[in-house]
Image 1 (tube, rainbow, N blue to C red):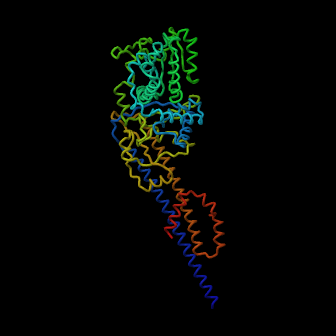
Image 2: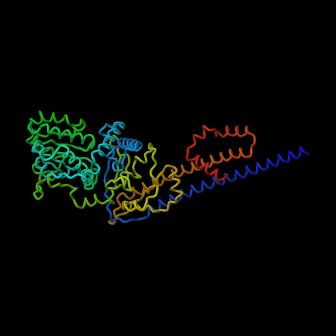
Length: 538
């Protein structure tokens, strides 16, 4: 009888264990189905929110300016690589996160990523020490009028491709008298201030007027009357300081330079001496012209954009002369309204070409006309169409979180509102996966009925929607992995609770590969989440 009673007790224990195992299996399957269903519901909500956002219309009174932007495919890949490295090293402030800015520095260092990164870091340190970020507001060059009398210079007009023209009359400069009015340090601050003004106003205004990307200048140096008497130690000091700033901190901003009215003395003695102060990459961009060769200047610049003392037809009598007139798109009130409007945007038509100048593809990118400040909700140059964000070789995933009301207030009119209902769970899932949620918006037709670029922009939104679905699919996979890991831990706990045989536990651990060394390979977030779930159930 005692044997039968023992068998019955054993059978009851086995049945109890079997029932518990069946119950555990049902609970696991139920949770896996629940997780999968919730993930698919989140995917559907994202899909519907994109569709609703594409249909929504907003105020079309704020201007959107079409800009042509032709990019070399190899250069674009290099820019993406540099941008990734700068982001990883926390060296990319929002205000400098711009494709063409990064490209200029790459060109200055022959596309060597390490050397370019070093140059970029030195530039950031210099800007902080020099105060370049706030120099437009903080610095006042009170002696400007007197300086211009001793060193005539200024911007006047644009070349045939829309670049601003900068003119200096070096032959009329008097370095000794100039230093009686100002100092090398103060003049250098003025020089940097004008560079900042060019980037903030002139290049943007010229891009709007030309409807193409403008980020360099055409410079004319009139050396008529320049002789050895002008090339003093003071002049060398000014030239050296200016050249260092231009080469190291504002590289590749010169498209072409014309040195005109060059005398035989200049070409034989002064020009070779001046080249010692110039960057090796700058010298090939400089063309020295004799007085009889000014016709070549007209090939690059229309005579209407040139002052009469350079063979042009402009005199600006009401402005006190051409170099005082500040003539150019940056002096056009209508264009400057667009430049200064924080809601204005560039509808950038990006065309990528190969090294053989064959067109690869084309896309539309919407971005602010002027880069937002560091305190702004939007980041300059951050766009869903940015190849640096969507490149297959890039590990950074396009941003995916809903924008705040403040962001919508500063948003462009060609974007749709981001006030779609993303649940806290959706945002939490994205945050846990290391993602951010930003809205990719479709274009709207402006008040005049213009539909330029709308089809391309809609296709871009569809592409972004497809990418979002891929991200959500990856999220579902990870959730299933969490469920599987939770199942294993629950089985492990079950063995400890109901199995008194330590060898059984050790054998099961080896089979399931849950040794300590393998557990450490599990991402901390997943392990922490699962342990919370298990502890709650216990």
